[in-house]
Length: 541
Image (cartoon, rainbow, N blue to C red; front, side):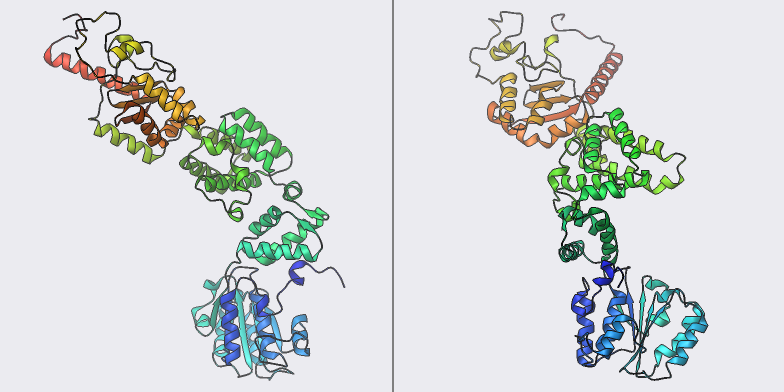
């Protein structure tokens, strides 16, 4: 006997072996046990989920010498002839190649004759939706009032193409996609029977590629076995089938996180030079970013991710927010949809890589609205805080770019004296001791030292000061601003504990501060014009 594929060897012989179709199995078994046999069935569902197998099992159950029974013996002449496809009373017809009305008229003539040696004469018509309109019309009367010994079983992947007049005369069963975990377990059993070894990641990949079809999974499994020798690994699959390797994808995501477009494009060039198509590269890239997005959202199911969650926790996961990862997915999927019409697919892929590298500058619309609301609540424009160099504002403010260092005027802030004067007469007789801005900031950095990313962002802030009862933090870019905003409560708690009183916090970017300063200048200029006045600096009055 010649080679037999896994799909054929593992074809279910009984209802209990039919994977992932519990509702169909239980309903048919109960109907057979109760003797409620319909004259026409319609099995609808995706390819490779067991429709034709269920039709053959039903035929064996009805014509078994021990039946009708929901558990056919499989050894009697009737069961064996149905299994081999040689039964004269179970006729399988391919609806795709027998579409004409003449083919149906032949069936209509044949049903007049009783079964040869079985209890029922059963017609199994696969892909029934391919029949012509005339053929369906010729079949109507036959399936509505067939002889008591005739049963029709129709199978289709496109039930919406079957006329309603046909569907209304049949008992309809809708077959579902088989869960990925079920497919993986069947593949593991096939590996065991073949006395092979396989990594679970490789079997999960095959199951995912099958998209719910057990037959497709077995077909792909046979192909993988042919080049894997005695051990199936995901790396062998990637090499032989022209997929992007996981290490290459991790290298690419590191370059994207560091905005190193030159190295990222070079990595793309290496992958394409190894024989991977642009379409396959986009497919693997979309799968990788899907995994990153799921991990970002706290989803760690290996069957959903296609890999161990720890393997996806790279630099890009930390560099991009959830919104930015979603944007990357949209860019990848949009290019995949239109790549076939591209003038040069490689150019488009390289352009995509550059765009993903710049995603760290993207801001979610919700964040923009939040910032606008904060500005509105503040009266539209807030007075710009003045730096220590001008001798105004908080004398203990930390200089920009050196938030962790002590302020140059820290001693003056602690005493309450203006810098550069003795201030003996100006000092109040009794002033409660206050905590300086520097002390508060140092306390915050110390309390958050176990969060190095946050501490680094605060130390690199353009401005980090305590002004009255508000911590003012001005940052250089959106990524560090987002990092600090996510930890507002922790920062406020550490600062409030050191200051001994509740504090507020204001987090913004350098560009926003520049805009506020410009608005302040415009406001002062408007006041000068209205009141015909001039600005008098301290000490000039």
